Length: 421
Image 1 (cartoon, rainbow, N blue to C red):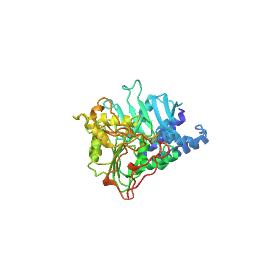
Image 2 (cartoon, one colour):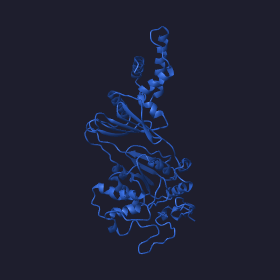
Image 3 (cartoon, rainbow, N blue to C red):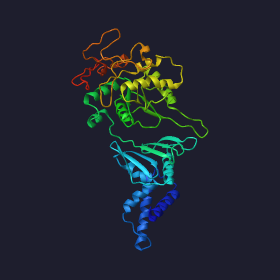
Image 4 (spheres, rainbow, N blue to C red):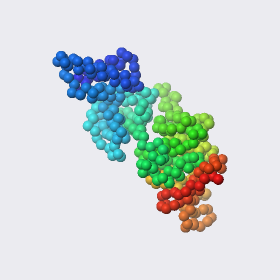
């Protein structure tokens, strides 16, 4: 880096220290300091004491990024086309755009990477050290940070910044993007309004959180939402919403709050809906218990199909260490909801419901085919078997009845949605 930039950077940092401000939260004040320092440099250049700057405005922006932002990474974080930034080692910084990734020309030093990580964690209240070599945190801008300390990774710390890119806030916007058909969006909206349980399944970067956010926008304003996440990612535009996130243990090894604890506490907060950002471990048991008590909810899970999602809902409760008998967790998963395999690409629906004889699901859960019921032969006519029922207590006059939806046209579209008379 040119010596002039280092000198100007030091001058701006001196101004910040003298004023006692927090540069991460008072960016405009830092910008004024940078402008003042650059003007003073230009004045000195008139006498030939220093070399004039080629682009003073660009220098101001770079100084603000170094002092109040995240230095060389700030340009990528400000770029709306960039979805994720990660550092494998100081001279290998990657970015992802439009689903593909590329190696950038940015070259850092190990000291710069450590400084960036410390600044990113400053406002999160989370720590990274030998006793806790992994960290998940949320940046002030809403981006998600994940760091693995060197020693666990070979040679250098691994840093991932997943940007919070708002592409859609409502189901109608997903229709405009081509993610959903209009019929599918209407069906999902009706399912949310009717209080049905919804699990959003997909792989990494499949858009699960985006879909969950849009589903949350369909929750009626009279209801109360309580959400639990490992790191804040959900953004509900709702008047009565409480968001909670987990907390890692302190230096003494105490004070940790797991996602399972948050799910339990959410039940004591008079929720109308409970939302879990991502189910991946023992918290699945508490979520299923809550949903089977009649409390509507939504969650996401890593799975490649609706069938795999149901399998996960059966196996994850076993991680709770409880003495759960065979078949009990199958009942829980069955009661969670019966999505079917119609709404692609963002929603799939397994054909039918769990078989009543849980013995058939010892090694692999067996699903009944559409149109087949216990003790009856399969009907070859198209039927809407397995659609989740709307609880009688949640039926509102004039409200939607997605459990009575009709198929029309393609098998991947849904037709009319009847209402409660």
